[in-house]
Length: 469
Ligand SMILES: Cc1cc2nc3c(=O)[nH]c(=O)nc-3n(C[C@H](O)[C@H](O)[C@H](O)COP(=O)(O)OP(=O)(O)OC[C@H]3O[C@@H](n4cnc5c(N)ncnc54)[C@H](O)[C@@H]3O)c2cc1C
Image (cartoon, rainbow, N blue to C red):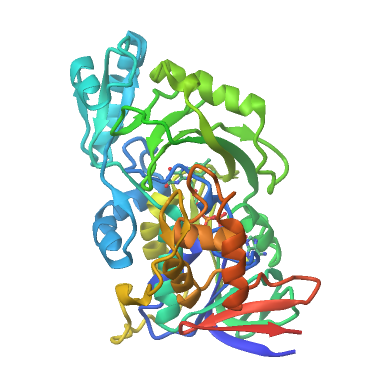
């Protein structure tokens, strides 16, 4: 079985792992990312509220607050470089009682100021002017102008695509099943028995990051899963900002947020569970969302939902992000316990992981020729037919074919959906999925059938190959 040699192997193709891969691709290093699912962004990174949090409410002095602070400065350039759909809509925490107003004044305003985030109290009149759907019983709200929304999948994919264009290797559908300490660093064994000898491993495996740590005998933290259910509506909700409740001692509550591609998200719940992979939705969860949201937006219960889904947060026993070398072996750097704000914090986390790698002994020499922005890979002329495949979202055949030609092509319907927006409209793919499947077949794009054919997808320098063992 083939052995691969690398300077750094990143485990996990979520927003954290890919952000780190991009950062490392700016240096003269041999790097790879290993993801057990057939595509990137299959964990928490695909099922979240898509909010770019400022960290106004982040607990002071935490690693999370520090990563969010660094990220605030990095997002504006990142959005440009990676062409991430992004709307700087702002957010407002709505006070419906005097008690809630006191909590905002006593806790959130001082916390935001200490974290260097601009906030402003607005009257109910000003609040309703921007967000007419909010309850008129509210007494005002705390506006956080710098909060924004973005497409989490584009962010994750673009991080990885830029890294792939800079020479990083992306191994999909091929999880890590073992890590052994060796004199050169660490030896990573993959599901297909391939081995990677690497100087350093970055552990960005989300809810499974504690299991990755256990491979080298590190038991310093435990990750437990916390589910968040959502519902998506395409009704015209009259709000232009993210509408946040005032958290209680028990829960952060449910919010209503515009979505970059249209529609509104209601949720999420916060349900501790044992199963790290359980992303089911339930009538009880949906009821909890509606109950919470109707306190802020009285019409919430009446909205038709086109989709319900759930994501699972990685709750860390240490109560903060874990971004540090393992105490057992400093050739493993943890980027773990990234629970609730990982999308927002991802550029800051990547920066910090780079520093930890350097402190652990990795030499970071800048690669002058590295791309810093995603180039225009396709011209408008590529879409010769103009045929529309997804009628709800007006996604053309050319756009879908271009996705297959991208640096990290999709091998699943979900992958096509997230790269193009097809199937995301009102019919949720009922009309276009058969046509997309035909296009996948015509373009040689098939999901690796793990266990059956044992085939794995590898992307290197923007070139894709599929190996069958
Ligand atoms: C309900 C909900 C709402 C949220 N809302 C927001 C929000 O609005 N804004 C925000 O900033 N953040 C939000 N978050 C948090 C954010 O989604 C997460 O912090 C972030 O996605 C974590 O990214 P990650 O890369 O660490 O984890 P993941 O995205 O879970 O990625 C980890 C990856 O590791 C892979 N993996 C696991 N084990 C192995 C193995 N053995 N080998 C190879 N690969 C492996 C997994 O398959 C997975 O793809 C929310 C989260 C949830 C659940």
